[in-house]
Image 1 (cartoon, rainbow, N blue to C red):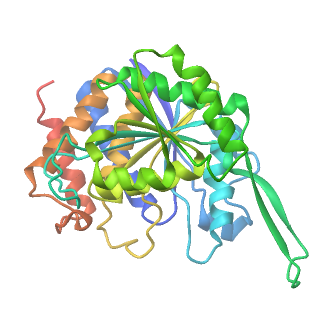
Image 2 (image 1 turned 120 degrees about the vertical axis):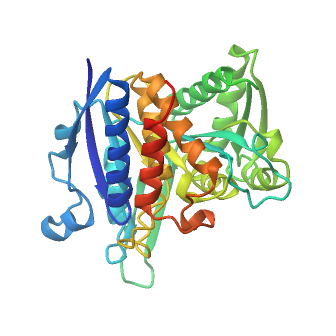
Length: 358
């Protein structure tokens, strides 16, 4: 029996609801497969923890999850707490110290789901966006001085290291090589950002020759948004900086049907630290507690977690179950144009797993 320890951090808002649903689906998969077992450790970190303790997670929090095999994360955010506190106090407080430098966000049209783009069908939009996840625009370098005075100054400094740039670009090149089309687009803004982004381009030009079987091209980030809308079939794998990929991947999720279905893997490729898996939709406090949150993004993230742990067959079973449910079209949550509740979508996916031919 293969055993895995999972840190479950539901966080805030609908993160609590979808991680609960995700853990239920993983339990059904575990029983269906019979070859592996999860030991789930729950952590109540987030906005409520902040209200009680003045911080989003305990001071020794990282040591509590350091030896886990993976982290299953919900969301961070609260309407009554500043966003920079919730994000830097929890999600980024895990990503950066655990060197989860490759943020991987697949986007594709699942069966039965309609893109808002005209005449785009399943297979036309099948992308993976690789986001540099530990430095760049979100490195956390900067500060504020003379606060509250007319001459107040605020600075956020983008930090690009050659080592950090090269490792994420090589990761993306390897990923592109593993996909059928072997196509990678580098997103940049080196025409206006003439230091760090120029280095970003120079490093890519220096290493892409090591992957002669991968076709590469380069796009300015603003032009890339246009290409995603007007020519989605031309895109396969994308690598971009922390900020640029953050924006592009949200657009990708919307173009593939809904933010509610989009997954994320925050990877530490070396395995030195655990990797973290999460839906990208955020805390969505406007629908919290209504029982209508779409859990598919959490399920897809769980499938990515299974694949990362080496449970490829279980990962495939889960994605097959998700696609059977979306393809049938009779159990569809509100963000996909239906009326199904979180409970109903979860039950449908569990039933699809249990009824699958393995």
